[in-house]
Length: 116
Image 1 (cartoon, rainbow, N blue to C red):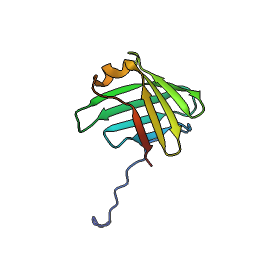
Image 2 (cartoon, helix red, strand yellow):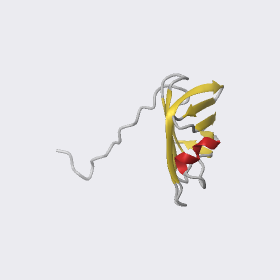
Image 3 (tube, rainbow, N blue to C red):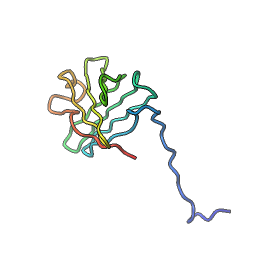
Image 4 (spheres, one colour):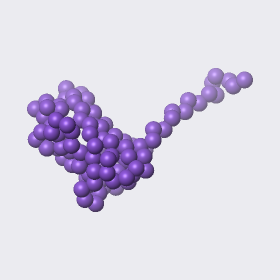
């Protein structure tokens, strides 16, 4: 019988796929970016934002590679995210069409660090 003091809780790792673009990224102010897939096209992207200053919102859609180290995601309501990859982080630049996803005083723009 296992002693309850010695039990170790193991969290199951999420599979983001095998694409060079796959992973989970955090900007440490309330934004979480998740990219899943196994190639360079048809990547599933989800961005959720909930900051302490009251900005909330989300956007999700399919992304594809548009240049080396860069993917582009478009949502069904016109929000476009350009996501540029660097070692250990990504930089997100949004289009003007994203304000409906998070409000006019907020933005998804910024640097998001890769979580391990």
